[in-house]
Length: 159
Length: 271
Image 1 (cartoon, rainbow over the protein chains, first blue to last red):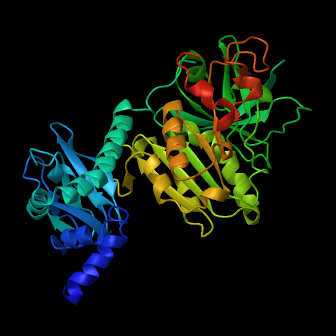
Image 2: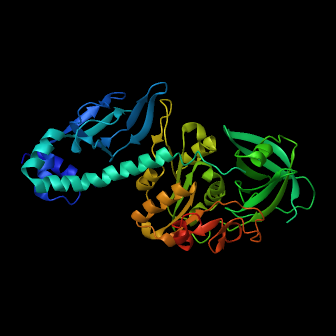
Image 3: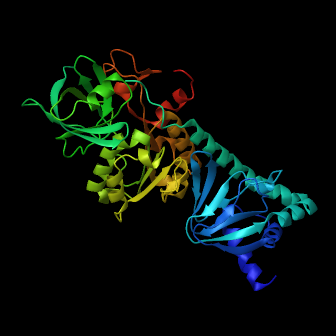
């Protein structure tokens, strides 16, 4: 392992998403990772496009948006340092459900989805480990979306 | 049980449908004293009464501050009174936030929507006795940037070095530069020691439920979580039964409860 990829493995292993992952699996993950940088305003994901990457945000701020005719772009979530951007890469048909763009200079670790999926197919235990880590994240995002849909602050008793 | 007349000195618009009333006693000899989290019954003469939490500083109880959201005939009428109008006030009633018991602990003040109003008294108390607490985080979530309550004041709190203040909205347009997402996301970001933390949560019941779940996931003991409940209160002294919640009366035994005390009731539908 090169010193650079060793550093990357350490960084990834410290992230809560991958904390405690088997070291062999951690190396597999790191092998699909690279550092990326987005300028303020730069689009990162586009709804409907192929979900070929996910990101761990290391610095900066990202908005997750929905485009609504008549309302324009509506931000439904902002993501910050330490957050995971993108889970559609792990669920067929591997297409983004939302837009995402950097709100300021943003640095992240990018993980190539096809690389991870190929390694998952070759090593189902690795694939299962990934699913186990992403399933709670997906459930959490769904729960939050449910809360937003409920519009909990909009209803008051008539007095 | 007899309301005292109070004169409206000022009506401050907070959001499109929420107003803060500044009230002064309209007669001599009316003593005003309350603790953070308690509420008064505000009486719009000839129309009806509503329970509204006091949202001012308990250490300076006069003038009396009440933040009211327009939701029906009484609240609309109260908000339309204008300067010089008269409103009846009786109280204070109910249980306060456990600010003294929380001394020595980290404190999480978690508000959703107009739930910030009953917690503002807590924030004033914390700022006046800051040295008695560990880390203090004020986490506030609301529907959109236009629905932020006490906006300039929250910005001032945020400027202090001894408070962690974080705000999020459920959705926003391009002119909002803060966080977007539900209030539970702020709990994950907050710095506190779960073994020595007291949480005070106020907002819609479903929001409080999700917050409690997140706090529990973070390791906060249910006995250290306090929530403020809302029900249809009429008499405010536990006689009429309108606000009965299982064996509890929200007006008399609450509105502030330890979560542990009422957790089983919250799981029952249509109590």
